[in-house]
Image (tube, rainbow, N blue to C red; front, side):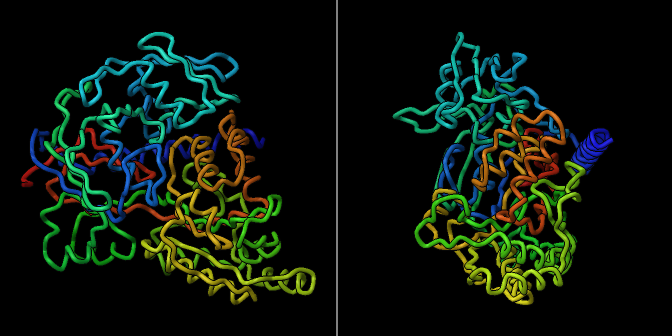
Amino acid sequence: MKRSFFKLVAASSRKLVAAGSLLLIAMAAPAESRPRYGGPVRVLLHDRVVSLDPAGEDDHPAARDRVASLMFETLTDVDAQGHARSKLATSWRVEPNKRVWQFRLRIANFHDSSPLNAADVVASLTRVNPSLKCTAIDRQTVNIETPAPVTHLPEMLALEKYAIVKRTAETPLLGTGPYRLNEWQAGERAFLSVNDDYWAGRSFPDTIEFIMGATLRDQLAERHLGQNSAAELTLDQVRGVEGANQNIALSRPSDLLVIFFLQSETAPSAAGKKTIDPRVREILSSATNRAAINNLLLQRKGAPASGLLPQWLTGYEFLFPGNFDLEHAKQLRSETAGLIIIPKISLAYDFSDPVAKLVAERVALDAREAGLTVQPYADSHVNQRSSRTAMSADAVLLRVPLASLEPSVATAAIMDDLGAADSSAALSATRPEDVYEAERKVLENFRAIPVVRIPQALWLNQGIHNWQQMSNGAWQLDQLWTEGLR
């Protein structure tokens, strides 16, 4: 009975994801419009990107990937149902043990006109994930052997960090994508021009320019918004833009805001970090009013979170406890008094994220009601795992994107982002119950406390057509074209 239930909710969730994505695509362009070549596209990104390397660390990897995905391509892609489809690989097959996969490459060229071959793929993937044993069988065939069974390796290889990048002394980063980099000012601007020799055919716009760290409020005040094609919005900006009768696209609530405690009680204590007792973490979880955060701070555009993956994707998030229960929090606080030391909890959040600031302050307010002291503060590197190891904060409030529409891959990606546990169990999952169990183990001791899910918001110029925003907020711009923009 339980197995049938999981199959039913998983199937229903995938149908909803597909329907939502098709609706966004259908709304993107009037039926009477026809695609046309030429014209510029100018996009305002909220965050600043300092490196375009898909395999590198960045304070804002989601923004980095929006730019990098036009330059660098993965072997596979994922459709609206979370299923793998061909990209740089035309086909693949797997041995019954789910550990040895073989991929056949298409004919494609890098931006310097050199041909893509199996050796390039082996070098790129090995650099990203040394645990993958990659072998070039011939110029167009690659074998990949994984240390443990991976049920959805093609879907995993669709993650942007596995994009195929050729590195040379003359040009550090070469890709095969529909656009090539013409100008780059780290943290400020990326100017891309169309790749006329792209294997899938020339894209429609001549150029795509990304302006980073742009303040939409200033653009509105200066009446310059009409010169842009699209602009990322934070949720606190959506209401004002909606009131001006503008074209706004919202993804499903997909980005997870999660409190993650940096020190594990099973690991040696790091310098400057306290080990927070699991009972204290449980108090904080019970005291956090997720519904109020969504209703008041997110203007009912998000969703309270209790699991790593959203209800709309898996259908089983409701099985994880995440209800606001202040009385339980107070009772647990009373029971632990005198038994354990309850310290002040320092909570770091991304200084450039206004929503994270509001949520962190509300978490601190809720904690106070239960007798805990949480001290939020802004930091510039909370999103980098290597930087978090050197932080003195007890916990961080992370905004974690939903990396894939395939649940096992999405779960593994979140686990890797948090550094909370070995993600191999999620990657080897063959049933929804297995993915659920992998989530449950991460959440069972309250080291990770899901708080709320946030949609990704986007303003679109009326002259933009076929801008496809997936359910998880990812952009697919392969059919994008412009009309009347200069």
